[in-house]
Amino acid sequence: MAVSIPNVARVLTLAVLASAVAVGCSKKVKETPPAPQVEAPAAAPQEAPKSGVYTPADLDSDACLIQRTIYFDLDKDLVKPEFAAIMNCHAKYLRDRPSARLRLEGNADERGSREYNLGLGERRGNAVNSALQANGGSPSQLTVISYGEERPVCNDSNEACWSKNRRVELIYTEK
Image 1: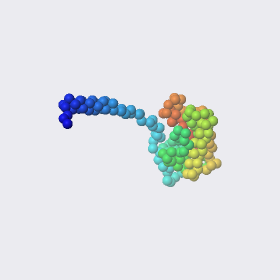
Image 2: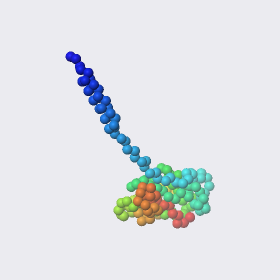
Image 3: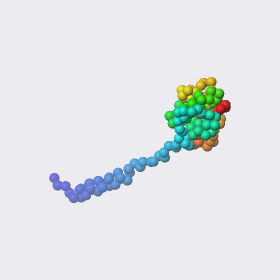
Image 4: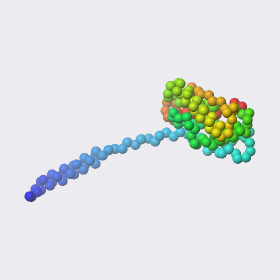
């Protein structure tokens, strides 16, 4: 059986066209922007001093004790490992200063109902309370209060702002 040249030319033309269509119709991958990063503490906290006793003056001068805000992930109430050194420093301060009192103010971002956010703020405060007690802080020195979404530090409606509002603030009422 003889193959005619026009048939071969048609097959080659169809193959070239099919290749061109396949290349022209390749799926384009849409790049997604990276997820926003939560700000880490300004300075890397140092471990609590191995020797010596904290004094009230250290609250304003010690690099670790100056850090008094613990941030949380969305809908989470677990203390992140990156805040372990801060928990250790504040627990040591409480051990060194039995008369010190610390109020743990739990906060949430604006998403969720008022009741949910109050509960979430309380769970976050209790998580910090537990971490401090696990490191030697006394329960009699600690008080937990939740403000839910009522005390935002940022009022924009975006992830960068919301991440700043998901926090527990450590407020010394007696030093």
